[in-house]
Amino acid sequence: MPNHPGVIAICSRVALLLVLAGAAGADTALFDPSSGYRLTQYRAPIPAPPAGIAALTTAEVVALSAAGARLLDVNPLRQYRLAEDGHWIHAEPHDSLPGALWLPVVGWGRLEPGAEAYLSATLARHVAKGTPVIVFCRQDCWLSWNAVQRVRDLGHEARWYPGGVDDWRAQGRTLVPVAPVPWVR
Image (tube, rainbow, N blue to C red; front, top):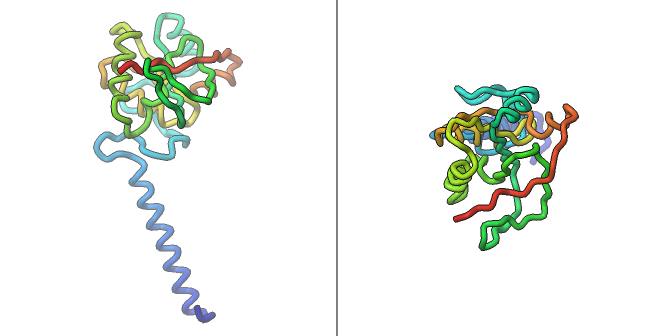
């Protein structure tokens, strides 16, 4: 490329336009246009809870849990296999809130086949109708933002704990090792 100021200026402008166009396209790809679920960049600040869903503090989670609310952890597993009996085979240990059900694949923007049925069946087995379900992951985790809407859409009283295990730990509360709820097909 010639070292001419005019050519360099034009190339710089084209490069800037390409970067801006890519950034604009990336913003529209963050959310599914039909469902509204977040599709990518799951660890990022979340400006507000989903419409119609209450965001809870740690103190509120403690009180509701003591009153019988069910805790639903949607912290992800990126690599796993399922045994024939539905138990998860994975190398990623996970600590969670005491008493939490861990469903590691129900927060993605696009679920793998059977994941919504897994969520629905788990809720039917472990949560009485009318019992609040508190959905969480980590702080700044869009997976819980997605999953709490699915829980609500399945007819449950859904609440959202946006600080998740990070806030729980920061408040000096105990985390315990958990295993994912078996995926019975």
